[in-house]
Image (cartoon, rainbow, N blue to C red; front, side):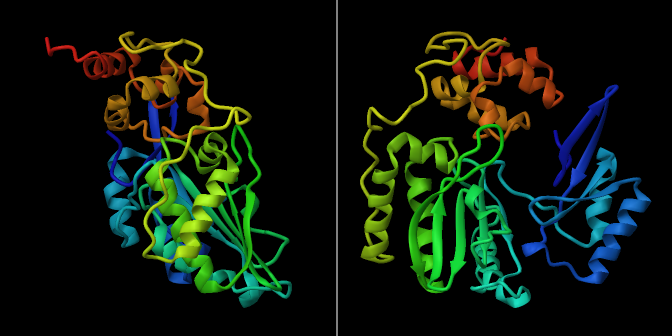
Length: 321
């Protein structure tokens, strides 16, 4: 089991090292808090790493030190679901930047307050940029917001990683309140209808026009509007996931070392809690689309045979021996 509030970072010569990443909304940190980071890193032999999500990671830590580290930081462990709102990245906007057109700090901190660590179908990242220079990389975030002279433009479906996707513009020129309300609508629709998939994958599956029509109709109807009907099957022109991955796993088949993670959770969704229980929570990660169970187990430092046994007990409803 992972130490509470830590992530496994490295396994080298059988030794595991961990990292903690306290939450810093918008990357803002007081000097006295920064001094605590430096003290803890020095005391426990860690290294400080500035992350792309505007946080400060302390890495290179031992499992037995994690509880003491959180106590010395004076913080609760930064807990959350693996599939949750991971970060809200914020540029300086009009508060600090001469080129800013909108108050990205105000909007971004409110989005952070509403959504950070909230469970989602897959990981979800938000970017808020105060001008079209988009220093918070809003165009490669699941939900991106970019300030202009006319207001806020909202984008959906962006991601980087192994399968990068530029976000699609959903609507332009919203004021502050309507931007928050639209994002509420997007999140509610995504949570109601998506499988374990990033927002961009969900949009590609059901079609951008279907997504846009449903979300904007709900947005126009107001907060009390009924949820849109379930998405229709994807049009023929929209690529969908194949019926089976490289292993062609089908219902009734035993899960094996070369079974693809995406196939396992598609054919046997009841195995999701098992995978999460072993610490493999990022099931919406694009890498899972083509990653064999054996490879994923190795990355997470797990014994693949033990994992296979646990999965098949659920998938095939095998009796305890």
